[in-house]
Image 1: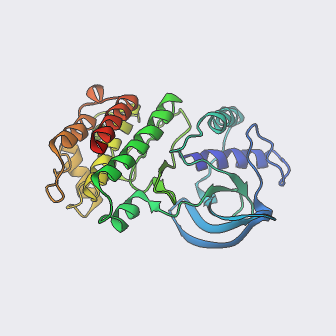
Image 2 (image 1 turned 45 degrees about the vertical axis):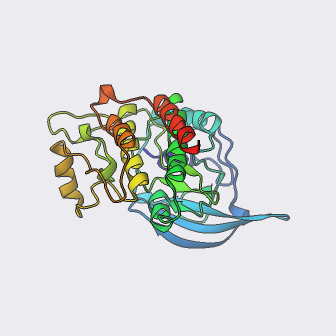
Length: 304
């Protein structure tokens, strides 16, 4: 499950075990930012969470932040053994997953729902999808490959730490004020239960749509999604952009049909081959480390 779900499930269990409300007694260094948050405004949300834009103010500085509040109705009971497993995973995440291209919480806050909410640095560039739409005329091929390289670097770090993102798509990559990409809403739990078809099917790996087998998320399925993100960055369009309804996209994927090659704007032959490698059968897909090396060489080539 995405990181915010994991942390808040832990909090729910801790609160159920009568922990003090003003202190989260867990083995990770989350700061209580409640008293510092001002001017919070609801700016959006999903079926499972609300997102607020706010300001953190101290005696000397202030900065914008995002506050993500999970909706309580998605919670279920957690047995203590599972809670301890999640605590261990969250602690590992907090101490080892920090990276320039991974979005990590800066603290938590009360007052946005029945449970503590997670606070992140504000990403003024918005999602990758909106960023590409707003900056299509100014993004050169080199700038686009910088974005691809940053996403590859974040994904390599996740995989190095044995974390599978599981739902990598254009709205789970956020852009900061400097135009740097950050992976968000990744999964820090090892468990997999049942069929996994991500809600953003346009970027999802083809093997998830096999009706005969239940296929769990893998590092290889992340690589497929990375190829779809690369397609989106190079074309400025979401995969299967010509197909309006998600249900029809699912049908195309289940048939083995990949996104069509763009000629306006054009995708260079070597770039198209790179994307095709990501979309090949799982065992033939490159690793995130190999992708980062390949993309880094392309950036060097484009700068000479």
